[in-house]
Image (cartoon, rainbow, N blue to C red; front, side, top):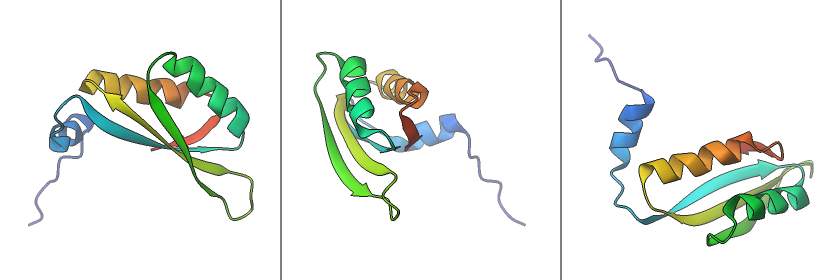
Length: 94
């Protein structure tokens, strides 16, 4: 008999076992890199971050970036993710 695997968001958060503050990366895919850069500047304000180009899609329509920053708590990490997810210039965020 197969064992049931819990796949809830809370369970995944517990499994991360992060010690805060720590460095965290968000992978972002966009088709409007200039607007993305402006959006991130506005979102982060004076907070330190690094946005690094990763690669261009096969057909050249999308660009991938890695956004790195220091997060200070679970809530902080999730808040950044949720705010990035709301941005119309971000097609996919991981």
